[in-house]
Length: 116
Image (cartoon, rainbow, N blue to C red; front, top):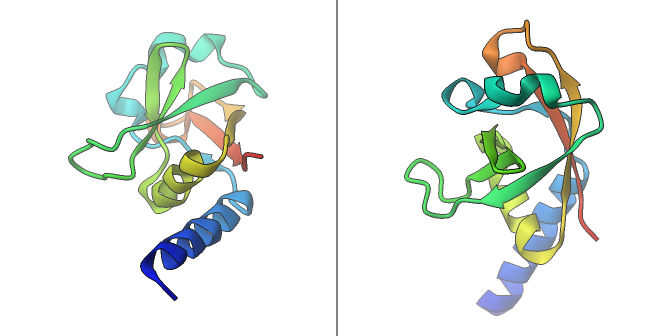
């Protein structure tokens, strides 16, 4: 099997992981602007997924945004799968739970549904 075929198979396998992905809390919210808009975020809202390949900590980093407001990131354990899925499809990110009183890292829970 040539390297292009292996790369394609890897992307397909990563996409399968995304489609089985569980809900997760948005990472790094305490360093970004979630608090500025948390009261306007509701369960079921769609958020934007934006790849950040120049991120110095994770080349697979994917930002989670509401309009032009940076909320945080897809956790590192899922970022490679989500970044791969973004290159071949259009996954959606939805708010599952929002709780302004929780610890910062437990204020916003989302789920990503695989693209088509």
